[in-house]
Image (tube, rainbow, N blue to C red; front, side):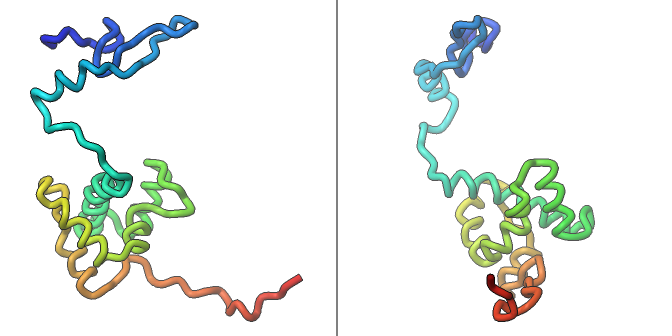
Length: 154
């Protein structure tokens, strides 16, 4: 507020707003923002794609696992359907539980432990820790409908 950065209202915020050829505000990077934020935040750093995915997925996976453990959802499929239809997860990949099973609970646990210092959202529920210890998936393994050798070719 002290910097009088009110966003589109006065053309300054996290972005600098300039009008395009149609008179609509177009946001551009404002180098002054880094200096303003340096006083109240950690130093700027680049995150790898893998780290961004981990930081976003770990709290979500932990929360859907807690929902399953507490009986808020009945099945992993119920949560995955909600994530596909509600948050836009790609239907052909499934939701958080399908992602977790694809990654593997043990590998997920190793990944999540690197981020526990970020707070309680990153603490893995005990039920998921048990699945990792016993190498158990949330979904049963998928069996092919028929052996590949039975398929007819053209």
